[in-house]
Picture 1 (cartoon, rainbow, N blue to C red):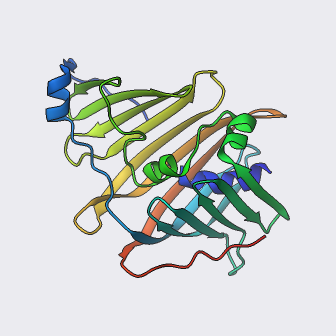
Picture 2 (picture 1 turned 120 degrees about the vertical axis):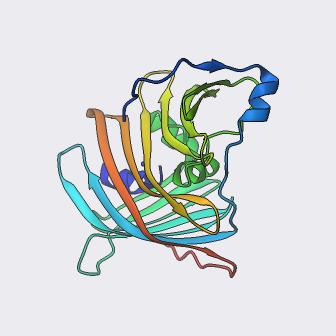
Picture 3 (picture 1 turned 45 degrees about the horizontal axis):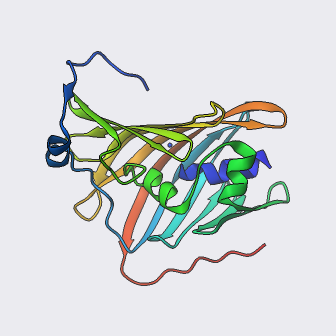
Length: 244
């Protein structure tokens, strides 16, 4: 079950150097200065290399293929080698479905069931934002925002979870994201190392994800390195083949 969950977590990539004194903003100044960038797309395909470091210490390397239809579905397939697919998954607005061919296990959970099991807040919108280095939630006046050097530091609290984003003032994308449960159980760290141009938009081609979550055997932590080698915005409809 944990290996199957790790396949889902590929959708979701460290330290703070000394920085100038923060610039505090009024609400009006925040709205004028802060301009986060969201990836604009209808359909997208991507291919890349993935390395998964499991809690047991086992490391899995392979190729990942991703397809996405905006606000509708995220689909992925992971092949460790020899052309044999290990995982295939589909994430919709309602649930997460993953076929684990290596271990003969399946995941078919609603997002609420995932939160109850692992104390992780996930939904389709949030997972899209993590993959594309968008801020996790729409900015509002209830959020805390300061500027430190070349980054905006954005803190958001939503439904029992806290999200902290470092947003580049250069391209408006998230450079680092941390999300933690206010119960202090599950947490996610995402670092975005390299951005490249995709249809005149910044796109995160390299990312590191570190996930901590609770299991019946105690706390677990996994690390995922992801590097995209080819990403395309597609005008024509895509297929999302999946079945248990």
